[in-house]
Image (cartoon, rainbow, N blue to C red; front, side, top):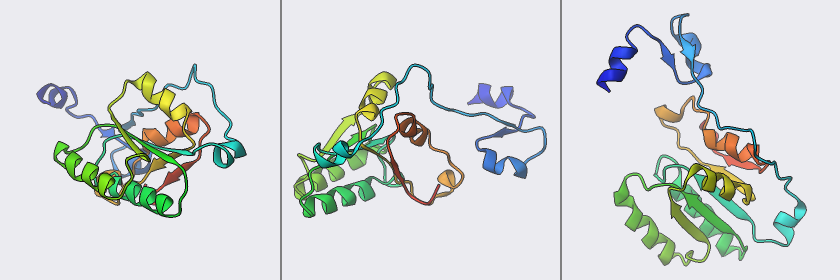
Length: 170
């Protein structure tokens, strides 16, 4: 942090094009976008939903502000309607203390065969999982940190041509 502070003295670093206009004209927008080269787009088909078990996927920190309880509510409602599906949640629990409570909830609701927590995966393994998914989830809550966010996960989902379900908070 000290080195970063020293290196950026007098620099305007903006995390989003949407707020760049609020700062001095010398500010520079730095993007953190996924690498697109070398990945084949998969065209979703009706078969993804009619004959196969749809796979909903979330990639990122598993936390309340990032919508973990919302994802589990979706899973609970789908299960209640007797829909076959899988929900793959890829990423670390943040904070670690919520892991037990979330896993207990999954068990209480009978969602063990529907919801899969994989923890953190390598970038390549994550992209492989996304490429096999049917729907990407980004259910961020309305907090200041996400107000002007462009989550990389949306771009990664789109890179593989899968539809995205997102909160209206971003």
